[in-house]
Image (cartoon, rainbow, N blue to C red; front, side):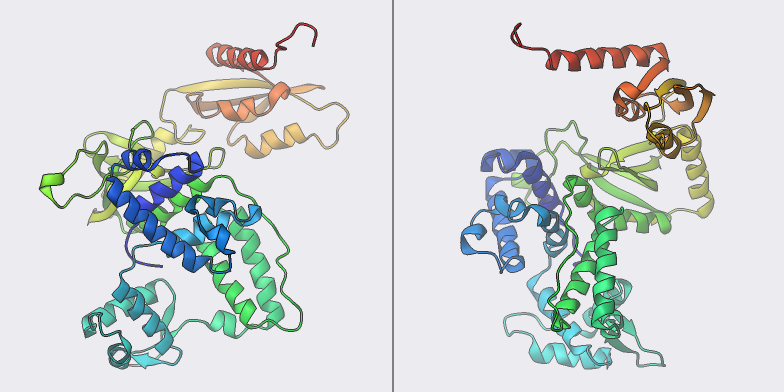
Length: 440
């Protein structure tokens, strides 16, 4: 994985998924807050990466970038995951240097030996690295688990960390691949799992015996935005663990733009609709119902704040805060979301709903679902054909989709305002299904 960010590419891929490529060049550029020229450069760059990633595709399928989502129905999640991380903004010199380092570390090498190996093989048109650069690369590769430092004193020796795949038999590799494949496609977060799956898949192909390798499972995941937002997850979790502030440019879901170019020429400086934020991050929350990530934190002016992670760009870590301050802010947040179905910090209200048991069906899947998903709510009354569920939550906005998902098996009793809202929604749905002709 590269070290630089790729906010622009993330927002472009998100719009590509949501619009299915229906925007024109001008519309894309306006929505991103960049020039058409910059948009064209981004397209060329992504197409180059796409060509490298999908060399096995027929030529006619490699023509249009928008078709990356339609090559294979069950493989359409892969471009949004692996493609994203391969699309990070690696400089040419960094690409060559990291490749040479990894190749040289098939055997244990010191930093100076690796410096000599890089200087001897770098292309003539690229700058030669110095010792400081090599040691910085080694530190980064060790942090992400690609290499490991061998036991012993100075000078330290480094070797590529591939024991996992080298020491397993072919059958064990296949079993491991199947497990990682299932977990990465069904658990949150998933990006790191997909990267691991890709590595193991290559190892399986290299160790393939007489029996051809066949992938036993097929998946189709529709929340591509959730996967795109995972690009920010490690950065935010690292800041939370280190008790550090974060700075970012935020674009709310209501904003007409989703990205702001970083202008270096004051003559061409343009206004963005993003808002600069300085926040102490405390918690990251995933809404499985809508496939959305949220950042919860506090700032000096407004106290507790909530952000949709899809609107975060240009994230940078700031200074660290004391452990006492972090714990105090975390307690403040926990107090406000104690009764939140998800992240709502509104006024508490008690919701009572009657759930109807399915007729002649065992086991009672309605009751089982309420007990498994109902969080801290409780069954207050049980009758032969129904039961009353009761829960205190901060506002009704977040719990309403869950109640609505039970259809006719759920009747909201209190509060009256929520009952009226649902009645109006069901009336509207009924109107959609009314016949357009009287003789139907």
